[in-house]
Image 1: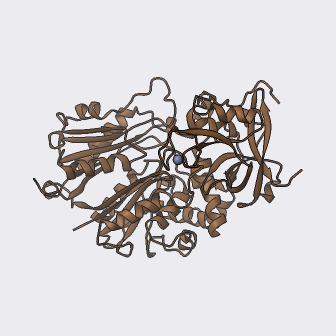
Image 2: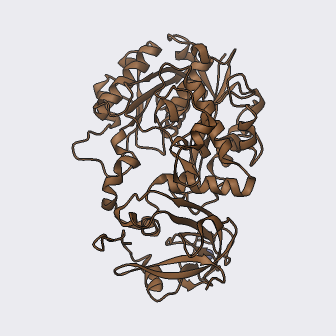
Image 3: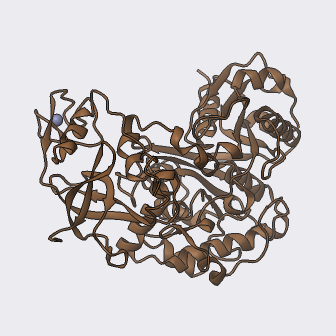
Amino acid sequence: MDTLVKPPMPVPDALTEFFWEGVRAHKLMILRCRNCGHFIHYPRPVCERCLSEDLAPEEVSGRATLYSYTITMKPWHPFWVDKVPYVLATVELPEQEGLKMLTNLVECPHDAVEVGMPLEVTFREVGEGLTLPFFKPAGAV
Amino acid sequence: MAETPRVAAVGVGYSTTGRKTGLTSRKLAIQACGAAMADAGVDGTDVDGIAVLWNPAGPAPPGLDEVKALDLAQMMGYVPVNWHVDGVGPAYIGPALQAIAAIRAGFCHTCVTVRVINQRLSGTELKAGADATPSTGDEQFRRPFGQLLPLQAIAAMPMQRHMAVYGTTEEQFAQHAVTQRYHASLNDDAIFRDPLSVDDFLAMPYLSTPLRILDCDLPVDSGSAVIYTTEERARDLAQKPVFVESAAFSGTGYMAFEIEDMVKNAPFHTGRHLWERTDLTPADVDCAQLYDGFSIITFQWLEGLGFCGPGESGPFVEAGNTRLGGSLPLNTDGGACNVGRRHGTNFCIESVRQIRGQCGPRQVPDANVAVWANAVGPFGGAVLMVGE
Ligand SMILES: [Zn+2]
């Protein structure tokens, strides 16, 4: 493995820095409206439901269900050359209907992946200085 | 106040189209405009509006020329124009709806619409430069996870979701590709014309499950143009007018394919408005030309426009409805999978040619009502077109 190949690094901004700070501390943080309680992901500067701009990150349970996925067979970036196939996944968080995030599904045989399966967050160091929130089957050791 | 004019498509045309043509962006635009003007029988002084979509799907390579509306209008002899629009997407539906709206509003009477695609701007051509794309904005929640090409979020995950929720099968996507290839075999302008079987399709490797290369449109260099004008002016031109009966658009977000509702999105919302604006119904449609940037998109439009119920597109295709001679001949030019990527324009042009009766061996008998649709997910639209 070419350890010089770096993953694409997120470039946090004032709106998203909380998410990456949370991930580094192994906490999954989602932006939430302090006026009406609505969760907002991807982060936006306003609540789509009540238009409040009084928003704050909140740690969520880390549970999820698999909404959809694709097993990517080709490395479209040098970092994935020794990592294909990998399971790119959209997961839905139980905190709010329709609240989804993009992630990877790990610790699951590819022929056992099933839409609707219960998942839980797991934090992985994928490269120097980069921790990502992945998901694994709920209850997996 | 003048009455709102009825809008007609009166001229259609393509540039030289193909893999790596070596033509500049402007050449592709000029050729397409010239072909559409010749088709309509208009010269530059007849045109007073222009709507252009040219945009790179990522960083443009150094030296690639741009297509800009006023630059093109000047080169083609349209100036002074009374209306111009640059870069309204997400694909050809953008300039088409801008032109229709501007003519209805009276800002201009005759509007040329153009979509130019440069193959080297397509996602697959950019893979070598993947490192160059910064993970800023929403991309910071995509690229670090390996969401690198549109096909993963726009197509593969929605396909998987559709299969899980409705029981749609890979064989049904294969059947769709086989039907489109059959139609392409009847089109001299198609690039892929060799027969294709379901087994051929299923033997192809996955790019990203459950998606294969033949679920994707074919990147090419292409310029495509359509000219719209008022009914009154259309009557004096070279071709039988094809009228805009109804048009609709829906937008729910921007490029958030991966976190939105993957089965009920823009096609679903567009469909409701398209049929509210006409007395016609899906049963009146003689042929449908539904965007196939990826095969799942065509399936979503079949459901969204009400040609079958939610989740029924797979069985609908499998039963042969979409083949020439079936209840709803679909993508009769062969679709962008076979004629090459024109980002939706080919579906407008094929609708016009079917209603004119100019489609030769792939002509739908007595076609007088056609619907075309373009784009998907968080943004898309459709236009219903009729003859006399
Ligand atoms: Zn709120």
